[in-house]
Length: 248
Image (cartoon, rainbow, N blue to C red):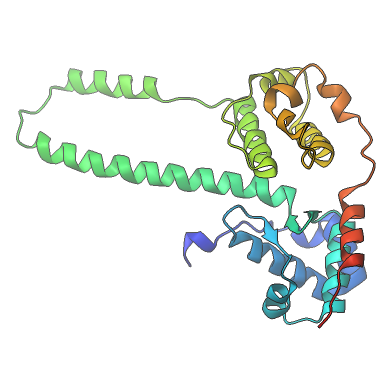
């Protein structure tokens, strides 16, 4: 199977609390529906599924409108998916795929370096062999060049990718976020702040420009984290589904 179609499946997914609530309501049919939607998300470039065209889902899943509405509503209600307009996504799946993409990037880089190493080896055959002391020195220098990524830096990268996915922007650093992690806040806290402010500002022309690291992760972070959002994502999704017209 090609790596392009890969995504991780936890061995204990069957007993995950959210999935257990889904199975209690819809049985194994709901379980299969959840992973079918994840597979469709996996094939999208940004891992976010546009469900505006419902015919697309009817075709792939082979279920009628009522069944689709029932299953999608339940997945949203238990927190397995989130929805913004016609965009359907999973927070945990986005974070997981960020890590998968990083691994693929490292493999490509390793392959590139391997190709260069072969070229260097071919050239080296035409030159006198280096003595053992020179080789030892070069090996030590190479190890010194290797960058060790600290856990806090890795968490920062995950949140930057998450913010870019939610806003469609291309931020590359967030110094204030690292400060918040040093204060004891977690990855989930940072994601909640992004979710809170996106729900308030993303569709506001005057405010959406403030959806940037310097604003979100400033000294106001704790206030943003503890805000009570007027409507949950599940509420919005439920309203959208209620207003959906089958008209077929």
